[in-house]
Image (cartoon, rainbow, N blue to C red; front, side, top):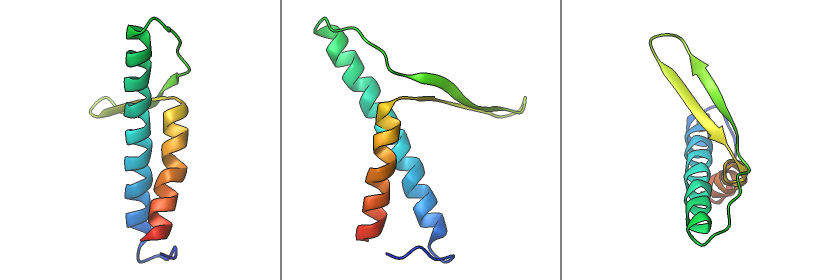
Length: 78
């Protein structure tokens, strides 16, 4: 799919979901490895905003950065 003004919201949603999925997958991988005895953490964060009514925070890790290109490839294949 080409990137146009008409399908830009689809791209943004896919990028958001890709980053979220990558973050959760990396956190799960870290938990599984910690159960096996390998303890490490490559996350940075939290990154987000707080406006006293609504707050949103995400911990950025390598899974987040891997989810973005995966979402872009999914968008291009649609």
